[in-house]
Structures are given as C-alpha cells and as structure tokens.
Image 1 (cartoon, one colour):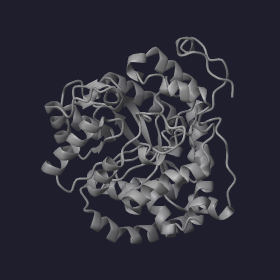
Image 2 (image 1 turned 90 degrees about the vertical axis):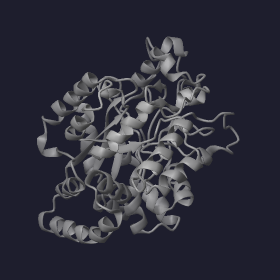
Image 3 (image 1 turned 60 degrees about the vertical axis):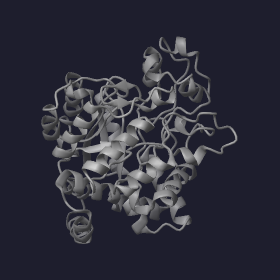
Length: 413
C-alpha cells in the first residue's frame, strides 16, 4: 500500500485510495459456517456518521444489502459523537432515515428486543441507534426522555477529549483524566431512569472507573458495557508494541468490571487499534484472537463484537488531521494508517471465516450464538425493557423455537 502523505497535507488530499470496509477483503469460509451466520442473530456496529463516514445514500443501501445477504441481522448505528449538538444529532438522524425511507421494506428501527428477532426472521436490517457523546443533551437533562423516544439505545459520556461529564480516552492518554463530574453523575441518573445503556468505550480510565463506582453504588445490578473497544492485554507483549499502546484499548480490569456488572465487552476489528500488529487486512484468526482473549478473560456470557465500521478511511483521515486537538495522539493513528492499517473486518465479509476459526478452537454453536448477538440481547432486554436476565434466559429458548418456526413457514431469510 502506498504510504499516506504527512498529516499536514492529508487534510487537503489523499495520495492513494485507502482500504476500509468497502474495500476490505472477503475471506473464504465453509458452507456450514455461512449457514450458521444466516441462522443466527448477528449484531455488529456501524460507526459511520454522515459526512465523515458516508456521503451517498447508495453507500448505505449497498452495505446493508451485502450485510443482509450474508446473514447480518442488525447494527448499532452512531448518530453523534465527540462534541456534536442536539441539532447535529437531528441532522444525522434525518440523513440516515431519508436514505432508509427509499427502501422502507429493508429496515426496521429497533424499540425492543423482539424487533431484532422480527428483523432477523423477515430478512430486514435491525437499526439500533446510539450516541457516542452526551453533548447532544446541550446541557438539558430533559432531552434524555426525548432521546429515549427517538430510539437512542446507548450513550457514551465522553468521547476522547474532556467534556462536562468527564474525560475521554485520548485526554487520559495525555494525562488529563478529570474523572466523573457531578454533571456526569446527573447524566447517568437520567440514562438509568430512561433505560439507555451506559457505554464506556472512548472513556478515560479514571472517568470510566468513577462511572462504574457510581453505577455499582447507586444502581447495583444495572449493567454497563464497552460496545467497541480493543483489549489492551492482547497486544501488550507484541514485539513491535508502542510504549504507551493504543489510546483506544481498554485494560483488563475495566473489562472485568463491566462483565461483573452483567454487561459485555465487544472487541472491535479496527486495524489501526491493534498495537504492534497493524495489519493491512485483519484476518479471521486475528479477529478470533480478540474474541477468544475476551472470552478467556470475562467468560463467554459477557462478550460480543463490533467492527466499528466505516465506509472509507479517507474522510476519517481528513477529519482527524483537520481536528488535530481532538486526535492529539502523538501521531499514533496516522502512523498506523501509513503502515497500512486503514480498514475494518466487515462482518459480511469475514464473520463466516471467523466462525470456522472459533469452531476449530472448540467453541460450540451455543457459545457463538451468545457472542454474535445473544449476550447483547440479554443486556438490552434488562436495560431497555426492565426484564431480569434470568427471566430473559428462561424465555429465550421458546422465542428461538418460535422464530425458527416462523422462518420455516415464510422463508424470509
């Protein structure tokens, strides 16, 4: 791959086409693995805002059609991040919904877990909205109720930088983690009140641990999660690992706390975050290594995955260089891009091959069904619907049976 130009020049132009989801490799897999993915609820993540991820409606339609064709049930979709305002959230929401309105038969906006099952059975894309920032509140906690009714299902307190709620991971990387603020506690209170999942991805360790302390003390039994974070421990001993590691990785102790709360951790197949490795195309083995590391750490009941997918890295590089203060990482990300790590393992192209790899490691179909979507469904049901996890687990086998019966009758997927 041709190296990128210097960061200063990248904002103006890109020297060569860059790898990303749309250009990522399609990996070979067994027919059995492909069928398993088709039959199983699979929930990924598309972190691709309009303007810095996708710009044309057809990009969405092509991406989601490929996902449907390959058995991907749904995606957590980012509507806002960083310091975006409520008005920006509305604008992002409009662009996504306007595109989806062109093919209403292909999309189902998720309000509860049964909507995910319905989308799976009907061969539609389940749309799970998330916000990677709390700045969309514009300082008004009453907006949390509106966000709930809009369908926002999870929220991050602080994206990389320092905000009114606390510090993100990049600020912490540079020694500026202020911890959870009183405002941050108020935001958590409203999230719990309205059943919006607390996501600690992108959050600085002190702020994240403060938030976990606050949750454990005030809302025991309510889970919190990391929706898209690389496990730091997997890469700590790589020969080429950097001194500080990738600022986006989470340490083992935070992953363990999330699991103890009843939540889950989802490693992301984002190549530039794989400190010391930085592959040009993440392989099924490397993706399976992430999943397996997390399972060995926190148990099979507390792991999912999320590609943190983008359509093109070109716009991301331009945005990062134009907003250098937001990505003040000492050049880590641009350096990783220069090494070729500019993509994601798009689920439609890699998950069946990951399945073959995990089977070879001894994972059962039941294990994979939990990792691919079942664990998220359990947490969603608890936080969104107030359903105790033991009740969900008791009901779920019957729901699976009914779903299979429906599919056998109507052959939607």
